[in-house]
Length: 382
Image 1 (tube, rainbow, N blue to C red):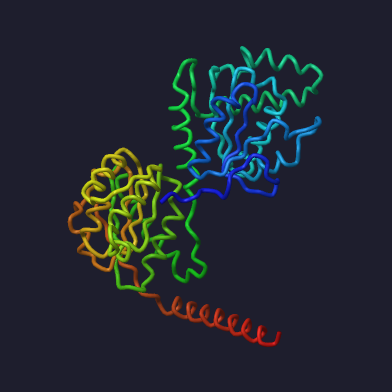
Image 2: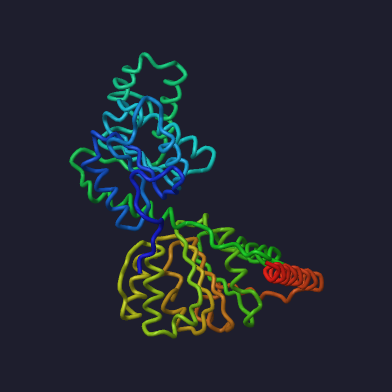
């Protein structure tokens, strides 16, 4: 049931590798305690983590492997402990992490490990003492490090006070990382003739609703009219505006399999909450969905719903979801939406392609066919 977020586990792979998470920390403070537990918990969730080994870096210059690991990561975690700033490597890494954040919007999660956020931000307390040891560094370098500490101190993160439950914090961090990593767009449609107009129509419908309401939108029409393609593109346009998101495809087919509804409920809970729960009873699954999701602003796509019982099991009512949630359903049967309150229900029926769109679609198909024939012809010549 558990999908892998990344591929493998990392401590000293080559710089060409791509990581889900880079952990920035002072080894002497947290390697064998908090960071060690966090690393193992991330790996257990299937997350590809980079954590340097004790003997990885040699010499005074920051290694190419380290730079590559930071640049190749989707997200960074900075564990800011009391003696963090005593490590030049920590500061060099932090500067590179913030550069990746500025250039590539890389996410940074700070963890203030038994330190005050104000000490990090203002370089006071132990951070002031540590920085005084770098008297031989250039003024430019010191300013760069202080700016990095100020920037990370301004970010929202977690504060672990002395005596607090570290295992509880590890669980919270892993959950937040997992959710963040799974907020990725679906595969783009390659030949969207007439697609943008239909997508904008849906976005216009939804933008004219109360932003605090839970909204159900049915994309309704005959099979083959492009409902799934439209829903996929809408998802890619807006998924980042929601706390969580999930796209359940081929519901009609999957629900027809043994325990198909239970499987879909499991997939929804895992995609949104990261909970790997075995569901044998659809009623129990519905209760869990309502219980877990009712405070969450979610974008949920239910693709190819074939019967109202499938909708009832996965998104039975508006009170199952947090304020501002959108549930978009593609279906051939508009009556499936009949149980949703009228004020929370919208319907969009895609129009057939107009003459220009149909012509462009035909031209596109001919080009694809021509390219395919050329490939076959060239293959035969080899």
